[in-house]
Length: 117
Ligand SMILES: [Zn+2]
Image 1 (spheres, protein in one colour):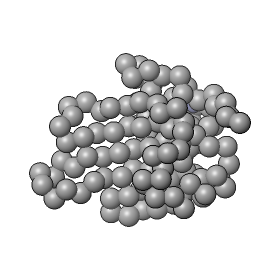
Image 2 (image 1 turned 45 degrees about the vertical axis):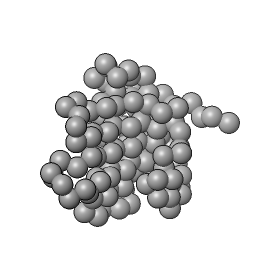
Image 3 (image 1 turned 30 degrees about the vertical axis):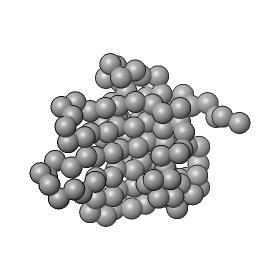
């Protein structure tokens, strides 16, 4: 059964700046991973209290320095759910829906923000 989430970030569109998550939207509840190019946090929306599993992942291609970056926000109901997601690889997280992707590629001039449902 799909759960319903009420966060304002769920209702944005790519042209709606509401959708673009920033640190101003969240408080960090727990740090799950804090490595050089991989960060995983449990975040809580300041407005509505919705919690998210968050991953930031930077692909190192050793070329120009402007490496592709991927930010994933997965709305969750419990901290336990986040700890379960934390056992998955970055690749496996690509199969979890719904999730908010905030990606930036080396060739992009703007961020590519979208919901994957
Ligand atoms: Zn919210």
